[in-house]
Amino acid sequence: MIADCTGDNAGDSVGPTADGFETYGVTGVALIAFLALALAASPAVCGVLIIWLFVMRALMIVTSLASYFANEILSKATYGDQKDFDFEAPLTHLVWITSAVSIAVTFVASKMLLGDFKTDVAPQPDLWWVLSVIISCGTVAGALIPEFTKVFVSTRSRHVREVTNCSKHGGASLNILSGFVAGNFSAFWMGLCIMVLMFVSYHFSQNPAVMALMPAKFAFAAPIFAFGLVAFGFLGMGPVTIAVDSYGPVTDNAQSVYELSQIEGRKDIKSEIKRDFGFDADFENAKHQLEKGDGAGNTFKATAKPVLIGTAVVGATTMVFGIIMLLQGLYEAQVASGIAGPFKEVVSALSIVQPEIILGLIMGGSVIYWFTGASCQAVVTGAYRAVVYIKENMKLDAATASDKDSKEVVRICTEYAQKGMWNIFIVVFCFALALPFFNPYFFIGYLIGIAFFGLFQAIFMANAGGAWDNAKKIVEVDLRQKGTDLHAATVVGDTVGDPFKDTSSVAMNPVIKFTTLFGLLAVEIAVTMKDQTVKTGIGAFFFVVALVFVYRSFYGMRIPEDK
Image (cartoon, rainbow, N blue to C red):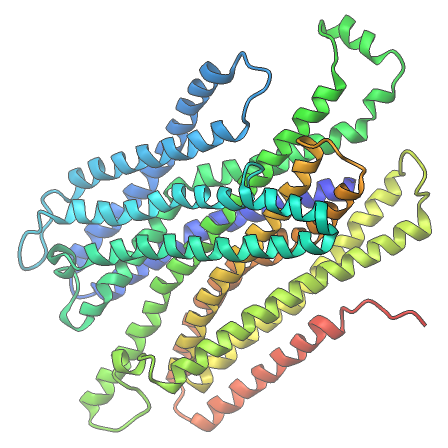
């Protein structure tokens, strides 16, 4: 249980928080790089828009803090004197209050900063509200996606209750299958939600005020700018997203600390509490409320994951534009020189009918599925090693474990997590370095494939894991059947769900961002080299290295077979 508490801190708190702040920074960098490249010929216009971005980001932090304190006052007034209430309600209110306040502040601040905006050619009085609408699509997504997530992972969700019902009639097998159903349905509905909001942003990006910002040769880039602003708006509620996500490990560890305390077994503990603190201890109700809080925590841990992965994917489309502009510039230089070369007109070269793009999409999807397997394999092997140690060194019928044994279990889990991480990092690094040397257009297809395959795989795994977790919580809290065969079936589902929701799904976010950011640098190196034979040799070398570590990520991490 101590290892579980440590894992909750690392996997459900520190990891997503670091991931959120990384996404927060990368999205801002992507937009600034976009503006600097697209508007290089109009530095005054570029400067005004970058200042506007920084002001929006600063104000969004302020709105998150203000909304937090407003929600605290509202929650205390509503629930302060209640002993039992819906723990999800105050968190839901916080998300929606923050979204509404952020949207209002976005419009007011944009009017103040961009109300009299003018390009090098003419004034653009509509720009302030058009950009506000586009950013607000992301802000609305930051509130809508948690609502869609709750449909599939909340303890009140019909999908989660279906998982519980399947467990009653078919045991662990139907539990697993029903969780897969919830995850797949969630990927469809969340994909539809993101698509609609991105379509709205695309529609407004065609407004003459936004189109006037783009140079004629980059007229196609207005929607890409809009998509970057959607990701920017996604993270407008970044502090609140991290706060509601962190609620999960707090409630989970509170429950674990209660169980580790073994307070119920202490002699005369109730009279001691009455004497020292002045109230009658109700341990049964305490356990019930802790379990209930953990269920709400599971729900809101799940809500943060699609928001973070969504920002990574939408933001990646903006970063890819840097590669597109680089290749377009090289093509124009090639045409001006009158010498035939390897570069093509970028819009036609990125057409879906081009074989390089199709092959890149397939390659990107392949890497996502390898990554899913490799990250889960690291969990499988680490869990196996921990179980072997526990069986060989700990008395399973003892009431407590020694500090030494607890630390050793944590060490084993950490060791195998790091072994898996090294395999995965080297593969992702080598592919990002190898593929641009083969063909930069193929690499753009690869980046798009990783982003969009990763989006749906991550949503599926995160929400399937959340459904399994809260199906177990329904059995423990609503049905109060802990320790029964039904509970055992849901524990199996929860065990499968943990690497789904807490390992593979959340780790796709940094994989997408690293590949895109590092890929931009790798393409710049590759296109400056003239000798295609040398480039192919470098690409082949790093590709082979990647395949070696793909092999190691399974065959080097396998559980040994019994002889």
